[in-house]
Amino acid sequence: MKKEFTGNHKAALWSNNPFINASYASYSVGQWTSISGKEFEPVGNVMFAGEHCSSDFQGYMNGGAETGRRVAEAILAKVKSIK
Image 1 (tube, rainbow, N blue to C red):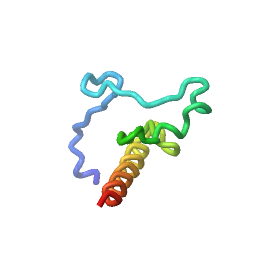
Image 2: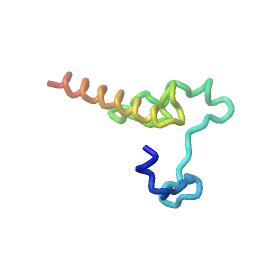
Image 3: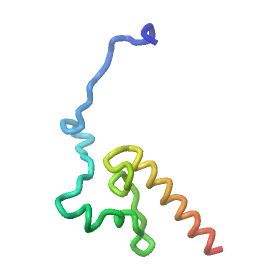
Image 4: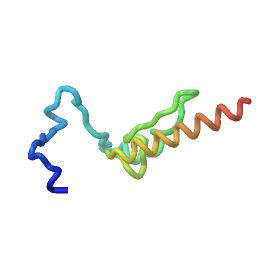
């Protein structure tokens, strides 16, 4: 593996990158007990996904992938029930 490394690399800092300008979700005082677990609940036909909706992986890419899969499965189930 070392022989493939050319020596060229870049460090990316999200907080300094104008094309990202992102952050992770973080509960404020009192929100863990008042809204935790409700972030993923649909509102009518609107469903939510993202790392901020994950109970187990909030703030991580895994949370976005997990909730995206769950929403896709919920949409498929809803479409199949309409037929």
